[in-house]
Image (cartoon, rainbow, N blue to C red):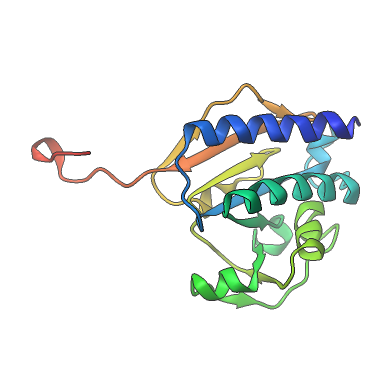
Length: 180
């Protein structure tokens, strides 16, 4: 797998994402990632610690430069709990759960985040303002309603299908209502 190509795909995809979204500082960006899918395998069957580290490192660096918090979703074996910095959990009043991700129970990206973050903790659920799903890991449950897909030229990272989401406030009130 060409690591430089994966890194460039992430940078290009997220650059295009930020051109189309208005994620504010201190927003939460959810990353879901199957390193197995990136490598062309079936989700959960070919986890790669190196690919997880590369992806998390690249995304984390970009988010930090924008003042956006990163939450990395673990796999279904941890009920899709997320790794965040302890400070984020405290700021958002998130319930911390007791588990440590591993390569085969949590996945490569969650493990990479847990090892990279300053004070990592796991939380069971979160409401982020946007996100990136690499390999169809189902991040939608962790992104605020209403979710809006963001189209970029990057449709795949490695061999994994990629989806980007932003959110907007709900439109309520019906035909008499006015919206910004």
